[in-house]
Image (cartoon, rainbow, N blue to C red; front, side, top):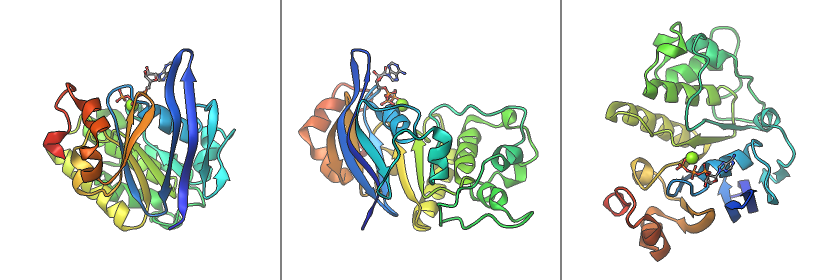
Length: 250
Ligand SMILES: Nc1ncnc2c1ncn2[C@@H]1O[C@H](COP(=O)(O)OP(=O)(O)OP(=O)(O)O)[C@@H](O)[C@H]1O
Ligand SMILES: [Mg+2]
């Protein structure tokens, strides 16, 4: 399998703090990878570097072998890379449908197909996928936290990405919303979309993924199957004393 995303020895510092320290990994086309790590491990910073919201001091990121360096976030989206944010920031006065329609589809993705003609365009398709089509005329500001997160996913998908990055999509969701999101993630994965998903700890997605990357204080401390990483001494140490730990879910 060829690497769609390659992160090569990426280091990102904030003044004295090293948020990412020579982090390297590859994600193959069609693969689903889950990135976990305690608070402050560098997970969101990793997404920010990949998507052009932050510049690394060292290392580089490539998509299909092409460096993403120096591209602005909107240019990264045109290359086929879409993300959601940890805290959704909707335009509350826009409707659900308008929010998704504003996304400009890239030519890069192949999973959802090219956006069609009026009425059957990608907006309808992605809103149906996250089960928000019925609510397309409601202002985004009236949605629950869970529906807002699913709207974020729909907005990202409407850009027709080749690679989708989700930052803690499960945080703040109720059990029913979690199940809906899991269904969406499984459908996208089955359709061949490449996914990288941040989770706080081994949890919801561990039954579904075969690849877990663990960050701790900016370092990649493990990379493997859920069973492999949960046996790693450094991973157990990183989570020891943390809220809930990871053993219960591994
Ligand atoms: N813009 C910034 N300026 C200064 N420090 C930052 C900035 N962004 C992140 N950091 C620091 O970098 C480290 C990594 O932060 P990051 O948000 O990437 O962690 P995270 O793994 O996403 O954590 P969480 O699970 O809480 O979302 C933290 O110590 C954070 O305080
Ligand atoms: Mg984060």
